[in-house]
Length: 206
Image 1 (cartoon, one colour):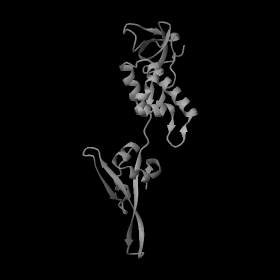
Image 2 (cartoon, one colour):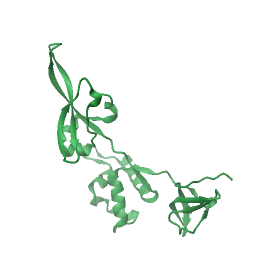
Image 3 (cartoon, rainbow, N blue to C red):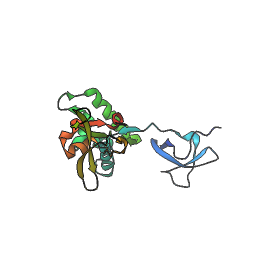
Image 4 (cartoon, rainbow, N blue to C red):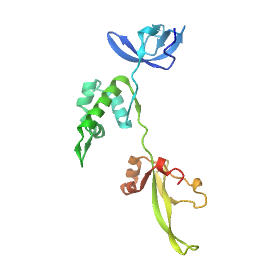
């Protein structure tokens, strides 16, 4: 009999007539598994397990809301849905409301389904997009006797919270230090910088 599961796999198991998600922490004989939430002396036969649903991805603020809700008074899925309006970021994500375009019902439904699956089956936190703040400036080139465009990047010291614009080294651009920043960080520094934000993936090598 081929072993289906290994240590670290997430699985579905029936407990008290309910399907729950658990993690395998040990195996023996290829067909018996020890689960994280079971008593440590309890072994479950492989035929009693099924693969767990794939983890959905949610933003960090949604993950934080789920964890806080489960520890607090809104510790049921229904309560978390009904009280999400206490958190504007989560409410906006669930309703997918845009001040300019109104409510997008299709995306709102998808996000609500994601929230329910994340609550019930677990989740992964979305990797937040990162950007460089890349601003042009002109300098005089003696050789061409003309203005040329160069670039400066925003540098942000997370320890001191200080920022500065630093011009690129035209001879050794790979030596330049460019801060990779989230949209929220850029706008917190100065919202005017956002118009100069360039996705990191698009700017590699520039």
